[in-house]
Length: 431
View (cartoon, rainbow, N blue to C red):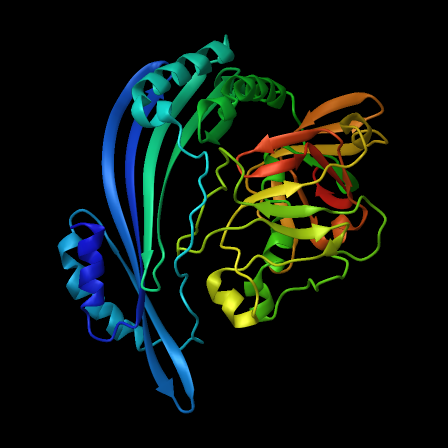
């Protein structure tokens, strides 16, 4: 069943007042290895259609919006009429404030689809496999996975929006080994990018090989309250609470601590934070011309000079608050500071945190806690690898004296300082 047939089934369903249909066609080529032996290789093509239906009714003196969603895959496409009727029944249990779906709008062109990945995926996988092995050198590669994906996304709405874009993504996962037997350690790495140029696989493998070797001599960090410099993977989620509180949804639901024109943290003892969301950067994983609901995306300068300036807003919450919609998602862009990375690591002891077992600060409270996987204790010119133990604190409090490195780094959905130094972070480790 085509997307046009799904739309016809939804339009013909009694009770449907509005709808969004999103089709995703994915071609995925995958390779799996144990050491250097290929264990499996496969190619798959899938089509997924996500449908959201809206109904309208009155409850007392107010008009309310009912909503329900369902998903169609290859073996369920013909069930669209029955699933649409079921969704209308389910929507009767929902009573949200009404809003208008995105209407007709020009779709910006973006560089998201690499022809090499889309048209010659096996050649790309061969090249990535060779690059990984060459970069690892004498470091054993215990296992590795390679994905070359190409997708086409199409969205239609009952309000008249229709848009299509293509995108590619490379995914490489590997486990490097250091030492043997009970003394052996493993260092697990993941790289993602839209094309090989941004993947940085060789450099990443070299870093992970060094980290694996260093972990053999790593001990627990000291327990205490220390400055911590976050870099590498530790940067991916560090700013997430600011982004969450800067959303229109947070404002509408009443938990945003950010107010337009006001400082985002108490005090001003550190570098002022300048943060924006940009969904239009070429070749970035956070880029897309429109979101899942068909809203054309737009950059948002959320924080400037340490003060909150603008909210990101889906079409729903933009309508609720009377804002201009910006769509969902985007790449995080943070301005650099003036301090060289080497100076952020001076005035020790300073803990340099690169990787955590898991690190996801609370979007609502800003509280964070993470077990260290790869870190270094820097003290008076001496650098000691540490692993295990944990760091904890609160993003909004810790950023009161934050300092940002002058050097920059680019990660899949992050473009900003290579290092962020937060003072007075609680570290739990050895006594």
